[in-house]
Image 1 (tube, one colour):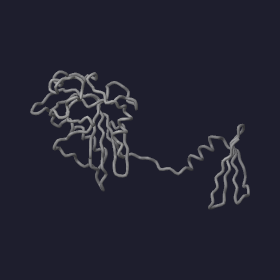
Image 2 (cartoon, rainbow, N blue to C red; image 1 turned 45 degrees about the vertical axis):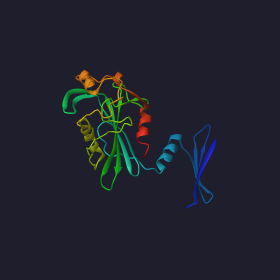
Image 3 (cartoon, rainbow, N blue to C red; image 1 turned 30 degrees about the vertical axis):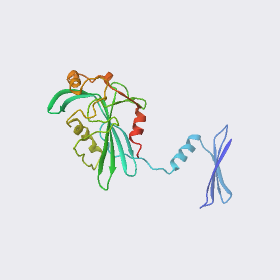
Image 4 (cartoon, rainbow, N blue to C red; image 1 turned 120 degrees about the horizontal axis):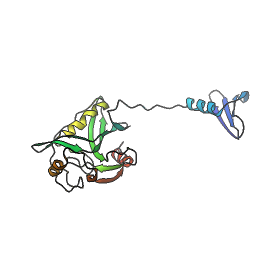
Length: 233
């Protein structure tokens, strides 16, 4: 048998809940030391009453972009991670346009700085995932296998300026900006294990799915990668 009591000093009221090894719990109320009555209640009734009396603040996210898998918010920063499914598209390499280049399953992590009425995109991080696997905290994270992304996962935008946004949902357009950016050979060395130059690689695999066996491991699981990317919040 165990007993718990709560005293309201403002009113002089004390409530005593007694949990028994056998039989229903009882609740007895006292006012200024005088018992006002005792009753028996089910465990479920007592638990529901306690939970409903707790003072808590619900967490509400803004409207998130499609394929958002993570959102966190601090006093001045926000982080949102989107999953981009595997797909093929046109890429721009120096002065060339190459059709049907396959991209693996990707993660875009956005770091936002909150201003008075807008949010600045202060950094974008990109990593890759294996296709066809159910995403969970233990999923392996790989390096982005092409150009313009450093081994720190940070995107090099060149002279391109990222827009300020008013709503988190507007981030849905930023991956398109990245995919339509020109590719040089910046940050390409060591980004995958094919041992092929960028132009030779995309010409060889265009029109197919990106071969997951070419992805280079980062050593991070998904939960670890998220913690690393969002550690400044």
